[in-house]
Length: 469
Ligand code: FES
Image (cartoon, rainbow, N blue to C red; front, side, top):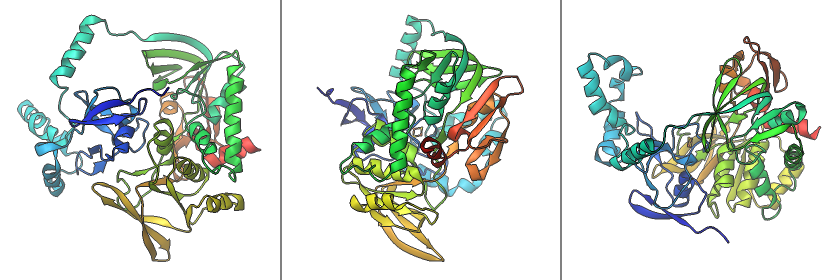
């Protein structure tokens, strides 16, 4: 039997939600896409990355400011509010700030009002709150926190000990590395289930009406490989899994600080495999930051993990590459009306195009987004550049998924001492000298470090080449 619905209070309004979904997803289902505003210009912000890597979903939750709504599960009577609305934080003040922005250039906050102390205090008292993110927890939250502190000493971090190998990341590259390691291995994955950000999307798409993965042979193969590797790991005695666990810091030469549902933990290793994947990049076009514009990885979370209601919604999937096709297949499986907009570099094969036509997806070819158009603060349409100075009609849509090259997650590898170099063609910072999505060597402190998969600059297309070879 399904768990009963829960009710949260959004700015005093009761909203019925599915248990297990995030606050951001629950609000989306109730038509609330604007969750916050940018501090300086008051631009609307919404769930953008859906995995705790941006500021778009910072809200006041149960009296505590700056809580990420995309990572907070709903529960009965949870109090949720935007923290930048009302008389002082709302639109009039944001408009005033936007019109006086030229008086506050970059560096304004930190350089001009820190001395003398009296000025710093006035600044903190009157100016900083205008950003809408500076109010302290309310009295109830403060009391609850104080009671918690009185009742129990602060939790100590657990020591998970030393391992021969620690693998960070449970996607295709991480699973492959964990299987290849033959010594005592700890596999750390921020998801409850291994298989990476795409596994759930692949499973849902495969179960969708009309078999949306039918003509997408390499994505079907990826799904098989992820399931196979996961099953092999279940039977691999050398591997211990740490699921739903996030790496929050890496300390040279060989220590990782972790966080899971019970608190903090540390672990050390002789060898670390950094296979933490990539983040979405949305490209540049006018108003590309409107709520409702996301990347494929955010879609996999919102439509996969959180199950947002997409039935009958019009969604544009623009770009190229396998993530575009997986996004379209997932949206179709979730009941959305799919518009597949191929950029001029896209080169889909005949089977994929046949699938798109069979499923009734509308096709646009050779287009790039020129601008996003909004209504009530969130996406209402995309305007296209069709090349050679031409423009196309606008396409009305409630959701746009922008599929390009991801940005490698490099922070942990960098903290461990990897030598990184900015490579725009590979999406951001990648290990110097990395070849074919792989860098294998030693850090200056002597740690054996392997950086693999998208974290080393590979694309999903590269990974598909590997798994289908
Ligand atoms: S941190 Fe929540 S959407 Fe990015």
